Picture 1 (tube, rainbow, N blue to C red):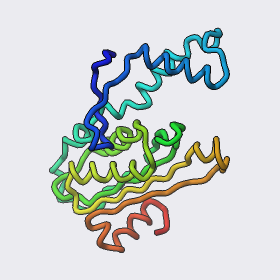
Picture 2 (picture 1 turned 90 degrees about the horizontal axis):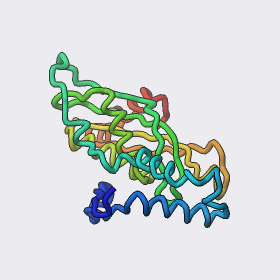
Picture 3 (picture 1 turned 45 degrees about the vertical axis):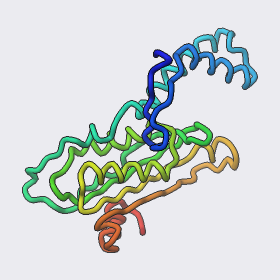
Picture 4 (picture 1 turned 120 degrees about the vertical axis):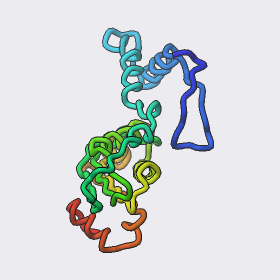
Length: 208
């Protein structure tokens, strides 16, 4: 990619764009990290690793080139008068911690109360993927998902819960395996009505 190419950073509004390095510069950076780790980037098993890492990064961080509004822009208004909770749970996701750039893996539960139509159910899974494929914190990921949902659908209420295991805890540092981190956020009716929160928890299979 041309060094003049621009990259939009959605989760940092104060930074509108950065200059993206060239593919050659990215591969050179990987070789530097391999050498810094203590290995020889020119040996047979590692000589193609910089190219593979650059290709993997384009896939792992594809969310920077996608917009949530594009995914949620098509809604369906003919739903037979349905206005009760819409919930998609156990949406698998994987992301990368912005502090150590190691994975955190989990599942998302998303619910909303329709106001003026509904969105295709698969779009909620794609919404999670857009924001997960960026450098993240779980807290920020939770907020981005529900903010995008509110902005695009204007529901009467929305609820998002994420459960994830962070490799920065299990692979390094404290080496705590099997620890689950849960984050959630409610807006609209879900934030105002404890009964709606309890209903969400019950449908997800959690206790509030």
